[in-house]
Structure formats: C-alpha cells, structure tokens
Amino acid sequence: MSDTADRVQKIVVEHLGVEADKVTVESSFIDDLGADSLDIVELVMAFEEEFDTEIPDDAAEKIATIKDAIDFISSNS
Amino acid sequence: MNQPARRVVITGLGLVTPLGGDVETSWKNILASKSGAGRITKFDTEGQKCHIACEVKPADHEYGFDPVKRVDHKVQRQVDPFIVFGIDAAGQALEDAGLTEMSEQERYRAGCSIGAGIGGLPGIESESLVLANRGPGRVSPHFVHGRLINLISGQVSIKYGLMGPNHAVVTACSTGAHSIGDAARMIRDDDADIMLAGGAESTICPIGIAGFAQAKALNMSSNDEPEKASRPYDRDRAGFVMGEGAGVVVLEEYEHAKARGAKIYAELVGYGLSGDAHHVTAPHPEGSGAYRSMNMALKKSGLNTADIDYVNAHGTSTMADTIELASVKQLFGDDIANISMSSTKSAIGHLLGGAGAVEAIFCILAIRDQIVPPTLNLDNPDDGCEGVDLVPHTARKREVRAVLNNSFGFGGTNASLIMKAL
Image (cartoon, rainbow over all chains, first blue to last red; front, side, top):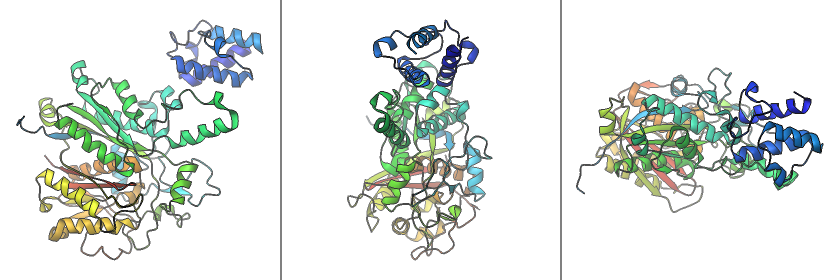
C-alpha cells in the first residue's frame, strides 16, 4: 500500500477496532468493517486531521470504501 | 387485582470499583480494610483545591479494571467512562445470574434501569473545549449519545437484546438506590420478570473536582494523606472523597428465579423514598427526610427493627453523617444497640450516582458471608455516635439476616432499600 493507504488503514483500525489485515483497499466501511453512518462522519474528521485537508459534506457522503477515501485524499492534498 | 404480590429477588451482581474490576476483588479488598484513595492521575490537578480521589485502577494494576472482555473497542472510544463501567458491571451481573443466553420471549420480559447522577461530565468538558478552540465542525458525532445518562441502559439493552422496560434514574447520589427500587416495582407490577438495575458514575475530571470543591463538598485538607481523607463519623472528617465506578444487580421475580434453579442472594423486601423539601445541598437538620425514607422501607418490608442487623449508611464523611445517624437512632430505638452500621465510602469514596447500587451489593455480600464491612479512619467518633457499633477499622463476622441501605442526594432526595436472606 502507498503511504496514504497505510495512514488511512491505521486510522480505520484504531477507530473501528478491526484487525489490520481485514482492511483492504476494496473494504466497504459499512458492509465489511462494521461501521455505521456516524462512524464514517468520525473517520472523515480523522482523515481531515491526518492529511490536513477539508472533505466537504457532499464529497464525504460518497466515501464508502477505503479506496474512495484514498482517492479523495490523493487528488486533494 | 387481588393477586398475590410478585416477590423480587437478587440473582446476579456486577461491580467496578476503585478496589476492583469485579465483585469478589472489590469485596475482598473492602473486608481487608484497603483504601482506594490516592492522588488523582487522570489529569494535572495544578491549581485545584482538591488533588485526591478514589479512581478505578488501570488494567495492569493489582486490582485494576479491564474493559476489554465486555465492552466493544468502538464503544469504549465513543462513550464516557461511566458508560463503560456500567456496561461491564451489567455484563458481570448477567453472567453471574446465568442469563446471557435468554430466549427471545424471555428478553421481551427483561429490561434495564441503570442510571447516573451526573453523566458524561468529562466528555462534556473536553468537547466544549474542542468547540471553543476549534469550532463546531470538530465536535464528535458521538458527543451526545456518548454522554447521555440513559445510555448505559441503552447500550446494555442493545448488547444483550433486552426488550423490556428501558429506564434510567437521575437523582444525584440516590440514583443507584432509586434505580433498584424502581426496577423492583416494575417486576412487582408485572412489567418485567428480570431487570438489570443499578448506577454508575465517573466525574473525576477538572470541572467535576472544581465544581464539588467550590460547593465545599470535597475534602481539601488531606491532599497529602489521601487514604485518611474519607473518615465518616470521625470528629475530623472534612468532606467526601470522589469515587467512580458502577454497581448493577439482576433483579428477578421470585417464581421465575426458582423455576430456573437460579442462585438467589437475597430478597428485596423494602423500598422507601422521600424528599427533604429543605435545601439543595444540605440535609434537613433533623434528618426528617431520611427518617421517613427508612420508615417507609421498613413498613413495606413487614420487618421490625429487631430483624435488621446491618445498616450500610450514606455516611459521606461530611457534617451530614451525624444527622443520618440521629435519624437511624430515632428509627431503631432500643434496637440500635444490636445493629452494626458502617460506611464503605471510607474505602472507595463517594461514587455519587453509583453509590447506592454498589453499597446495595456490599449489603447483599454481607448477608451471603455473614460479615459486616468496616468504617475506615474512624479514630475519634464524633458526638452523637455513642451507643452505635460503627464497625471501626476492621470487618467483623456477625449474624446478618436483613440489611438497610441508605442513599441521599443533592436536591433533598432520599432512598432506602431493605434486603433480607431468603
């Protein structure tokens, strides 16, 4: 995984309490990692902190998988 | 109508206290006259008037608390510590009662009544600072439901699928006792067969300590001798020591418990409650509210004062101790000579909304083990203590047939429970 992917994975593991090897690029936050909609709000806030970026609400609503998060961060930082 | 009254028994216990992360460790340390008090480690107390508390110890401590077994990692991150303590104590109680695997039909008849006196003060404090310093967009999406008082009952009901009454009492330091008493009435009134009932608190945070210190409720003169700070009935008592933790019991309808062959600790036979209608923080000087609360519980129990062997006092280590004692003397009359009365707050501090439930559990264990826990630091009993066995310093073996447990709270709210061996 890239540096961005590693950092995203670390945040997800810490926030959701899931095993690191369960967190793949394809993982869906809700379907695969047991998150609910409020967990995603919290994860998006954590990504904003970690990558010193702002993820607007309409963009945040489209983040459903690890890949969505990495893609947004990569193209906006 | 006119059906025989449904009886309520206790079939499970759960504790998180400054002296242990479970029932047996806490009780063993209480009986060994250990103190849970120390310098506050949760935050830097520089500038505070009070630097001591009875904190729940971390998992690596000899009698620490490890939430890993019963509280989901994600929940631990999202909620205030009082909820974590409450979920764990509720889980312990269900396990102890053998009720973790109930059928759907049973779970419709099983509920929760687990409250707190104050709720998520540490989280309200810290998130207010986030709001002030970094703006509303940084406030946690879990802020509200991670601080609400009824969210122990909420979390526990979700975790264990309990679909009966879902309730949470908020009566300051009487919360734990009211929670148990109210839940027992729900069973008696046929709203449920099983109720998880109790209370929790965790407000050892800068604004919690500062607030109680400003209200002149805390001991602020024993910062260098934390273990000696909580000294109920002693002439030199000077305010309470804040504790934290949770106590939860399984209340169960007697026939239900008997039919499944449950271990029955005791029967809850009396519940009394009253208001002082006097002052927001001080008790009525004649203890009239306390007396009426105890007397109501006694009448409901069908017992006489001669049947009661132990009183677990509210006894916070404040001036109010001797007011409570005078009202206990008034209630018991000549029988006062035969009872033992102690305050376990001398060992674990004042658990506020958790106190009544934790102390009810100590009462139940006193019945189980036929021993009464001590009042620590009672070196020089104050005027008014004459003629009462306050169990100074060390636990004592004695007959314990029935017990009275008192809790009184800010706002002038009083609750008394009477439990007896079956």
